[in-house]
Image (cartoon, rainbow, N blue to C red):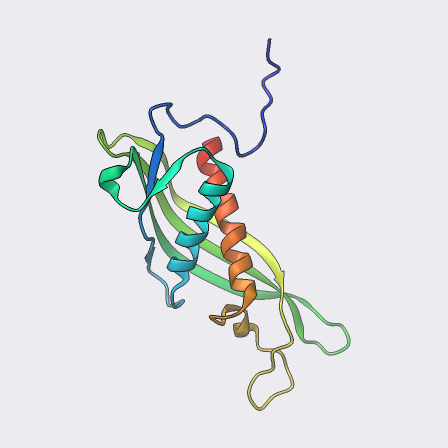
Length: 166
């Protein structure tokens, strides 16, 4: 007799018939350049790392199709250095519309039209041009490892939500 507990991220909320999932490139409705690409790639990696599902590029090869639309990405300073007054930690908020549906029937397996991801990140000491103050917008620089961290953390949260059907 089971106790009802299971390992997080290994839930069986998806039907047994679903073995392959197509993750369609997310749409970007924000001004953040290429954020949708990073988030899509991170979600694919997370599914591959945490689940038994085969992830395929073509919808026609999949049992289920995951679609997403990034509706907003916001950042704001939440912690400051008491000596310099400079921002040291940013709160990043990502909002998305997410939908996972069976390909053949169109039945919804997961839908959240207000998926919210929030996390705090320390910012580097990248200076603003002509200033000695850190530049909070540098958090979203294309090559900034913080953006990769954000994408990984976001993907882990989204995949867990889908698997646990929150």
